[in-house]
Length: 91
View 1 (tube, rainbow, N blue to C red):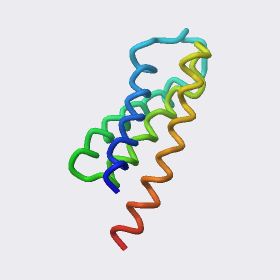
View 2: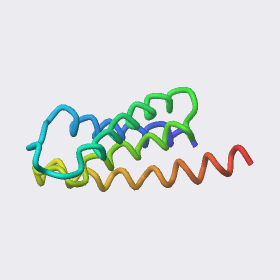
View 3: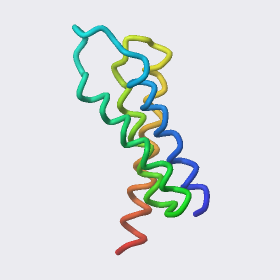
C-alpha cells in the first residue's frame, strides 16, 4: 500500500505540458490543465491511495506536439490503480 504514494508522482509529468508551451493553433489547450492534477500526487506522502489518483495529471500531455513528451502520458493511466484503491479503502 505504501507504493501507491509514489505512483502519484507520475502526475508531475503533466506539469511539463504547462511549462513547454505548444503552438496556439494546436487543439487541446484546456486538456493540459489536467497537469494540475499532478499536484495531487504530492498528497500521496500523507494519503497514499488518494495521492495515486494524482497520476491522472500525466494525461494532460497526451496531445503535446513534442512526441517525446506526449509518450509520457501513458503513465497517467496508473491513476486507475489509485482510484480503485481509494474507492475500496473508503467503502
